[in-house]
Length: 278
Image (cartoon, rainbow, N blue to C red):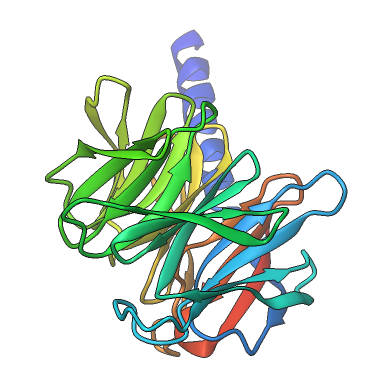
């Protein structure tokens, strides 16, 4: 009888856990339009008034045409400043270190003073071809991926060095403590300070674009053609959105952990959509 009871408890725990893993969903909140080719959204938890940065390519993704820029939105989707920064080329991922915004822009990382709303410098990345996502850790070290050369670079005190190589289609990045998450094709990888490689999840139907942490050990992942997944701590993945048939791209996402709000740039639809994560 004791063995049977133990088995019942074990099975109950298993099915309860499985049920929990099936409960996540996304509810649309708002859509901001008239944003030319938005590639990345960065939520900024400003104590006085939180806001969003949105990188706008406004042209070809690899064209040095000075058409790109950064817009600033309110958390409710109101466009505060569509032309917050102009004169970039094809800006993509973004990260903040103190009062400076670091932006991937094809072959260089642009550094912007947020308070002065001014470009401070541009950091060329040696041999870069298609810089994509940017993240920064708590010590101010910046990482940037180069998708077409399968590399990740490290920037410390504005000096870039090669950090990782042979990372298939390296794209989405997320620094967590001393670890670095990398979206590499259909795999979500974790690299420790010793650069040891661990596969956290795999089986994504398209190449990973954006990576955000939903809660400790669990993540939200976007794939550019129109897929959004929830990644559980045990590596299981749950598809939340598939908008491929409607040709609604889901590029480099942003996330507000305080309100469980997901911000999704719809690349070819020139819009950003917000969802509440349940």
